[in-house]
Image (cartoon, rainbow, N blue to C red; front, side):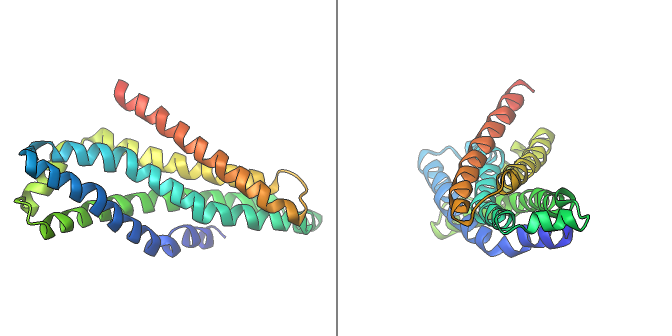
Amino acid sequence: MIRREITRAGAHLLPMYLFVAVALGFLVVGETASVAAQLGAFSFIGTVMVTVIVREVGPLLAAVLMLARFGTANVIELGTARALGEVEALEAVGVDPIHYLVVPRVIGITFGVFSLTIYLVLATLLSGFLFVFLQDVPLTPADYFTKIADSLGWLDFALLALKSCAFGFFIGIVTCYHGLAQPLQLDEVSRVTVRAITQGIMVCVFIDAIFMVLYLHA
């Protein structure tokens, strides 16, 4: 069950994350490099990329995409199972619904958000340089990646890992809770799904704010 959920929340979403990463790289990284070239401010490219992509936009966007794509399906599946009496049927045969339905999904979403965040950040930085190359900006690959590497510190890697895992864990908890919280009728599943996604976004933003404060005081 855990392997299946990791596959669903990870490998199956790679094409969508690649598309978003390419678009984000063109819009953010490429435009930033173009403006820096016009202003002669190449020295700030690494700091801007690390701050915007690695610390903030990359992890939060990866979490929101997971919530919108897999979190929605999670609530619908569990809510439908609850409304049809499948959860009570598991309990009747001695199967713990938490261990069978919730734990694999939470672990799968946590690993999925962590791995896809790294995938999204790397693909965004690479696609951004492709846009820079197409725009004939006088910036070599060595200079581009050297500036990014110089702006990265151990704290960036630690917070990226902790933040992405926290996003995934709480997305799993929120969506599973709303799917199984109460006996539902089938016509209530859509309402519960909207509520779960809304609360999930609020939780992700709150977690991001906490990590931002921790980083500023580290």
